[in-house]
Image (tube, rainbow, N blue to C red; front, side, top):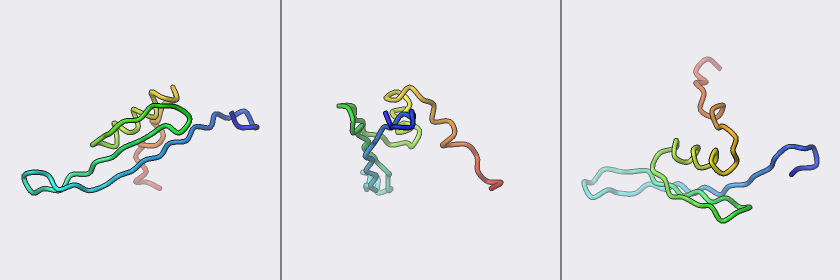
Length: 70
């Protein structure tokens, strides 16, 4: 917990581009929760956000809202 009462969690995310067997490029990723043992590989950003939500119990919905009007 941070001193101001806010929950603080840290994650390390690695994202890389891989060549698939069919020659197409595919994005891959890995995320690890710093304060715990949880980690996961992912292919979709939604999977990464679901991981964060599952670990913290807090929705990531605000991170993916449509920002086109900004």
